Amino acid sequence: MAFVVQQSGKEEKCPEQITHFMGHYVLNGEPVVIKCPAFQYLQMDLSRVSPSSFNIAWTKNASEYLYAGRQSRIHPKKESLWFFPALIEDTGLYSCIVRNSSLCTELTLSLTVMKQEEVHVPDIAYEQLAFEHSQFQMFCPDLSDFTINRTDVQLQWYKDGKLLENDIKYMYSSGTTYMHIIDIVKNDGGYYTCKLQFTHENKEYVVSRIIHLRIVGKDKRHYPVIQYPNHKPIAAAIGSKLLIPCKVYIGNGGNNPIVWWLANDSYIDEFFGDGRVIEGTFQERTESDGHYIDVSLIFENVKEEDFNTEFKCIASNDYGSQVLPTHIRRAASPFTWYIPVAPAVLVLLIIAVIVIYKYRKAANKKEYSLTKS
Image (cartoon, rainbow, N blue to C red):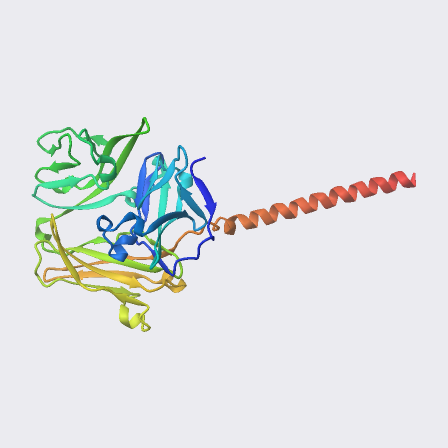
């Protein structure tokens, strides 16, 4: 058995239901770690909180509690859920429930496991940005859970499926999770893959990450660049809270940047007159590669009509602007299979009834003939 489960319902549902904006897209057969982001919303620092002060439970598709059984393939570990490895059947909605005597928050996120030969690369790729005629440090993202306390980290790097040699153009070394690309040019854009060997319970795994590198020309160095949201639709459950950040790169800052949202080409406060959906505060922060602005779209509770609304994040400064549309889709239910399957079941049932009716009719005729003779 992959994990021990029990039916939920023994505890009351949390009053706070939140859908996390970012889904997880992973490859079949690879180890995966998904983390409970509830603490981002609760602004709770795990390092300062006693583990005994709250309880974290994980469920799948709102009906199964996940526990660490003996030789578990899937098991929770504090605020993380580990898969050794993730399989196609693991696709679904996972919820982490954070509970103590004073709070109860349930946060749901989606996991999609894809076969290597069927993967749509843009769905699974991490976006990174580099400027033409500069040196770029490309990080292999989300590896910390697999590299902690390791000194033997050795990554392999690929571009468009071809292994990259450690030379004057691409430079990387043992013990690091990044690669330097020297003198960035337009042709350096594209898809890169980094791979890490990982051992768990004496079994070897490969952890891979696909990176989409976007090259920005020197003439557009000061233009705003929207890094999130991207082209992927955002899964959300009806009735849940939802926060969609619009993260915009603004280079060295300045140049009068502004960021705002539209719904069906109308301002948010005009389109949602009841205040159910609002824009968050304008936040500016500095990261290793420059300055960013973040303005979130906040849903108090998601409704049916939101799935048919086009939302746009718009970023502008003195040099230019960028528009990025995004959509919300209904989060998959564990019972969605019933909709396409039900008609087929009905047809089979009708056929079975006809066959049984004809069989009984033929048997009755035969019995009548024997009696008559």
